[in-house]
Amino acid sequence: MSQKTAKEALLNLINKASGKIPLRDYMGFCLTHPLHGYYSTKKPLGKDGDFITSPEISQIFGELIALWFINFWEGRGNPPNVALLELGPGRGLLMRDILRTFKIRPALLETLEVHQVEINPHLKKDQCAAIAPITVSHHTTVDEALEALKGKTTFLIANEFFDAFPIDQYIYKDQRWQKRYVTYNTEKDAFEFQDEIFKDPFGNCAFPMKPAEGTIMESAPLVENLFREITKHLNHQGGAGLIIDYGYDKFCYGDTFQALERHQKANPLDNPGLVDLTVHVNFATLLLIAQQHKNMHSKLETQGDFLRNLGIDMRTDLLAKNATDSQVKQNILDATNRLVADNQMGELFKVLQIWT
Ligand code: SAH
Image 1: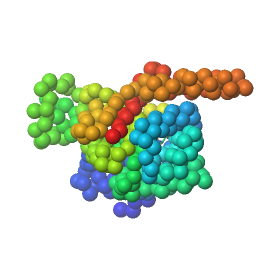
Image 2: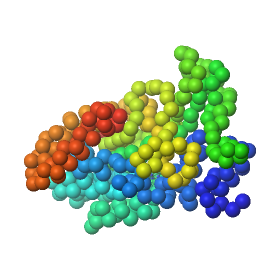
Image 3: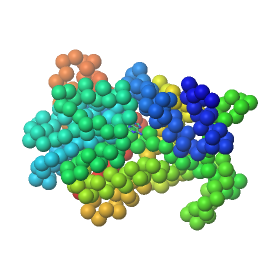
């Protein structure tokens, strides 16, 4: 079968797998297939894209993150050979704001190397342009980046990166856990879910409380493995990291798999490869992984608390006071509100801080 369209390539994958693929493989195809994947081909961010992120909303986000890293650096006695690694940098605005703020510590900028992990060739160009004349080493995978950072004190930042990694879903149906697959319904000419009894005994031993019919449980082994590698690296090399994303801080059931198209929710099984697919990040598990390293410190907070503790209100007041135009002033206040208010991004977004 020729595979000129995403649909044809996906059908081919499903047919080869005898009619169904796990949700994890569906997400993986839609997000990162080299020819048809959303992140391999599209420019997802900004007003004309599908979603908007904190550094796109306010410069203060990156400025405060820079202060967090400076605080760590000075607390460790200004170590040399520092690498700042960003995972999934989008249009590069966060890195731009961090590096601009680092100018208040020229000795840090002098000893700093910038690394970014990105799969999207269009975004790589934006990322280089955003920080020129400072240069960046790009990597395609986290493993490759960590390998290049051996021997360096590492600062790691990932904003809205982990939510783009494929997950598995299990649904409690007919009194049993069933694994969620994606199949193709020829009559309806549509992709749809298909659930199949999951033979692994975890359904019986790991969940003493009987879940309600239709309960969904998610598991993100790819993210967990990535995070294990990251914490291992930081533990060994020394450094600090911030993982920021929407997610939950206590173990819970629920379906968080969603598609976003032009800032609206869409059906995640329609238009594979053309819309953003995301899930909420399980920060409870990431925290446990970090805590397995005896010498690693960790703290999990809401984005609102994290930014308020770093002084977002003071910085906002200062910027607003210096604004000459009343509209600009209002925009500054609105942007901060969007980042920290409980009914905006302040509560839903979490910040996992790790340091050695
Ligand atoms: N951190 C940015 C952008 C978040 S969008 C911001 O806050 O604005 C997710 C980013 O991760 C994009 O740059 C996307 O191209 C990149 N990305 C998504 N999946 C990836 C993967 N598997 N490997 C490398 N980069 C990925």
